[in-house]
Length: 416
Ligand SMILES: NC(=O)c1ccc[n+]([C@@H]2O[C@H](COP(=O)([O-])OP(=O)(O)OC[C@H]3O[C@@H](n4cnc5c(N)ncnc54)[C@H](O)[C@@H]3O)[C@@H](O)[C@H]2O)c1
Image (tube, rainbow, N blue to C red; front, side, top):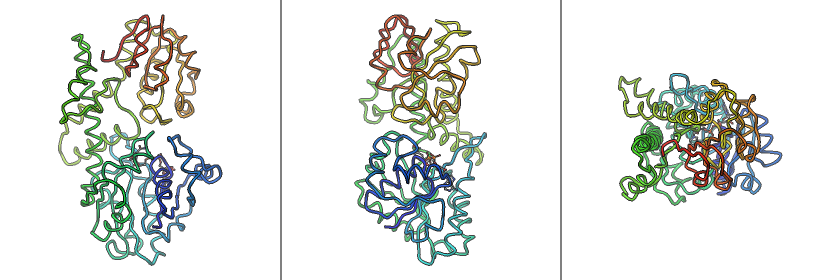
């Protein structure tokens, strides 16, 4: 099929590369010329994603800033960012700008195509924002073009695997003709396909991420209680996980969740609920606990080392292992507090130093061995390589349960 992907970020680039690999004719549009140039000239992803450079070297993708290039498409996927604003509500400017450009191109497009929103948006956005903008083309939804909302569930670091092997495909459709087009694209995937209306698809994405966030905050709360009682949280989680109604995943207590999705999507759902007049007490609790959890690491540290002028070493800056993404990483909150309290911060991460350096140019980025020479060490991201360091004689406060770190002279875990 002829596919256009709007937005060459984590989701858009993976979507474009995977769909090209599956034999589709793919055009990738972004407003960031540098990003497109890197993809075009070097076939290299501007962001780190396991296997993506290799995949890009195998496929042909046409990249452009020119929306006219989308004209021959059967499907146009919108994959631009949807950050949240201060109130937690979705910031729609990228969606509205991209959709306006698509509407311009639709004016000159004679054959039927489907515009599919892949970006995560609040329930109602496709109907209330995207479709009215597309209608400014003078074309009619259902007749001249179709509309779908097809949320993406891939995990950064495992994005190619997840795109190619989805647990489910959700097709929110304006009408069955729109959904049929996406069904044609996804029918060869070995995954259940659920066809719904547009706002149900939007809600499935937000509810899924809110549930995962809840599971993490839940086990962190259990962990905080276990620590007070001298009980090993991880043994408790193991015992719980055997019950298939609970499941063993997402039960790793620690300093909480970050990244570009869980915090933002949770805030988006909370804001949407409040707009309707409903107080989402569970979801607010999940978010509040998560905000406080990262700082527990610093609280534990203060019991062992006065922070003023102390050299504190951070192991890990990415929001999770396997990515260079630092959006909403717990490391941000931790470094902010350490600097406020007068500590000197040294940090190491195998992939995320460049991105973190843009936020905190004032801290020192060093090797992991140099981090070990600090007055105390904080483990913030559970990179596998941290399980092979020598911690003997050190003070380590662990936010991620790295087994080897237990050999430290002083060792304390955030929930254990
Ligand atoms: N990152 C993830 O793991 C993930 C997973 C599932 C869903 N999502 C959702 O997918 C969406 C995209 O996320 P991301 O992490 O890929 O974002 P990103 O910020 O990495 O990428 C967004 C891209 O869109 C481009 N862009 C912005 N405005 C544009 C415009 N008018 N026209 C063309 N391009 C434009 C930006 O330059 C950028 O390259 C978000 O809604 C996000 O919530 C993300």
